[in-house]
Length: 300
Image 1 (cartoon, rainbow, N blue to C red):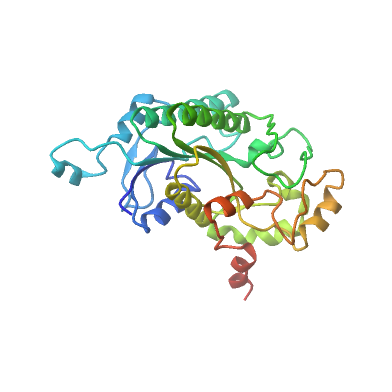
Image 2 (cartoon, rainbow, N blue to C red):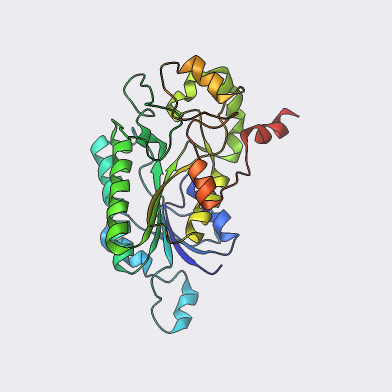
């Protein structure tokens, strides 16, 4: 592979699984984060995405002491994967969440474009669909949730992700670059599948996540596919697994629990209401970690 990747936020919940997934496929990775990665074989450069000069420096840095054997400064990285952010509401004040997420993403994309880097993958969010962090019970406009949906969050985190998608689009058009935004679903780590029986027992507990999820390892595959696919310009992709997190057909379930929400097309079998059809058709994503299969070892 031999691509040199700057990965922001690789020490976080999703990043700590995506980093080794990519490294195992031959990518050279420099993690850029406020804290060190748990993966000692992947170098971390400690820094702050809200400081534009630090971001610029990270994209032009050696990945380790071996770089100095070149006898010259290294060229900018080949691509950037940007996951660093305040990961949800209620961790910091709303204004700080918005500032860090919006300005951090602006600095990352701007530095990449002006350094001649033409592939950036950014983490957007399921929260752009407006229900996850809504005040009170809010219905979705229609099912399935696809990338042309009218995003309307009312919280600082979801709003920051909508703005980041607009920033990505603007830079992609200006610099004729590929900037792909992943609307990442509820990230499930390998040790968290024990929670799924509870999801089934309490269906409304998953409404804010549209009864969908993304296995952290399958997210690694999605990032890889984005890095390998060029020429798409600005794109938004739902980054979720295939199936609804209930034990009945999706159409029957939604008729029972969301009877007033229209359907824009038929939902087949147990298709997730937050649809990954675009990323399957355009990038060839094939999930490897269906929640039913992940539960089987625990039930033996």
